[in-house]
Length: 199
Length: 202
Ligand SMILES: [Fe+2]
Ligand SMILES: [Fe+2]
Image (tube, rainbow over the protein chains, first blue to last red):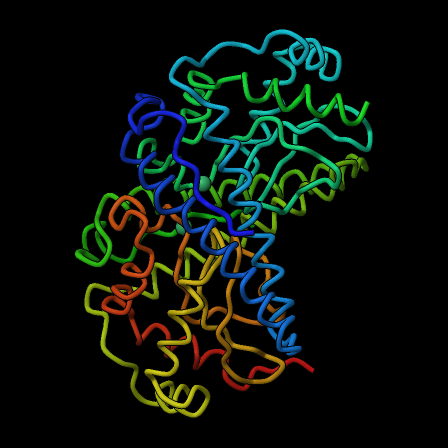
């Protein structure tokens, strides 16, 4: 199947002042688009190689699937876990589970922020289907630091393209601003889906 | 020893229009300083581990040392690799060695540029001296230290972290890489090549 870039679920200026219209435009239209294109082109290489029987470039194409695929998957979630109406704390079943697995919302948030400061890629809240619990992950690039069987619930992009134009080196300010627009509706949906499948 | 941030060998605006003053200021004063501080703090932690005998977080601290010290090394070389009087082509022995090793100067330039443009995420394009082969190679570092061959010394490095170009070039990394050649200080690269040549490891 061919991957396509979904439109942003809101206007480019909808997350201002947390994320400027300019940054969101570049980020979605060029960076995210690049991962979609990269994924499709790697798939084409793999298909051609399977057809011709010459697998010389397949190893590196599979790596390109991982890099670009993870880029697409995480950006797709990132856009959905923000919104102009966001900025609240989670509610319902996900809120209860965060409290259960991390002790409190503040303890989760402190740990997630530490992950975001440590990463050269992403901070993720995931549902770990092996241990049946929520946990935070530190991700370099889009895929380094993954835990097998984990499903992303909430994603925060800390690549420099995500904030540098708006915040310069002050990544901490960007992380604070992310929490002004975080939208827990999609994370809640993903969490409930994971529980249904794995518990 | 304690690492220290070296002064830039030129003014913040000296590399314009290839790299603008605002980038140079943030890049040197904030980012490079951050790596210097990070490397020193990792060394301090290692010392207290040795003194206290508790090596609990040894892996994390060694990781921080590798990341920050490599950041310090790369930026230190990077600033000296550039000059307002840079550009053009290398001369002398370095020029001959590049031609012999890479076929031609243009062949090298293309190879290095493609490597720099092709870094996945944050990292560096690098011309390295390989002390086992006693020859130059082109490499890529992800972040500052990942996927670089051991036993090599950086001769010419190009920072392609987004902080190195985003404020000026936005998402056009390719244009930034192409303009980098206008400020390359070949005298500095030649000096580094000269220092490395013949220094082999067995
Ligand atoms: Fe991104
Ligand atoms: Fe840098």
